Length: 93
Image 1: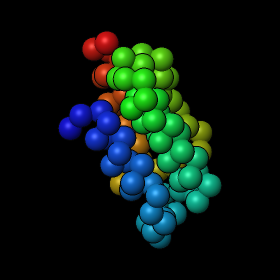
Image 2: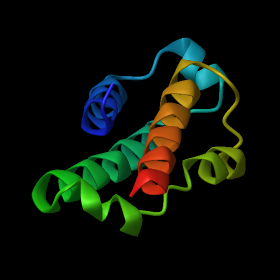
Image 3: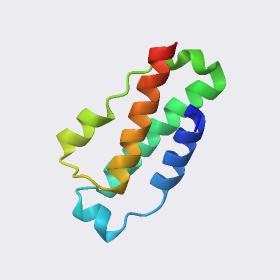
């Protein structure tokens, strides 16, 4: 899956309301919105200015999830996929 597709999927999933499992894993509505917004901003930068801009992005979603105390689950895995995709894309630029 290409980088923009990963970001598209994550932004779409994070727009949906949280389920009980998500809340039990430490997600709040505010955190969901903030993460979705950050992913959307990264996606917009790459769409407008090209994927070469990935080298200027500094994904820190893993640190953010740790700081907020979010436990493993579907949304954390999704955000982890975003971080990995951005990091891998930076390494190939």
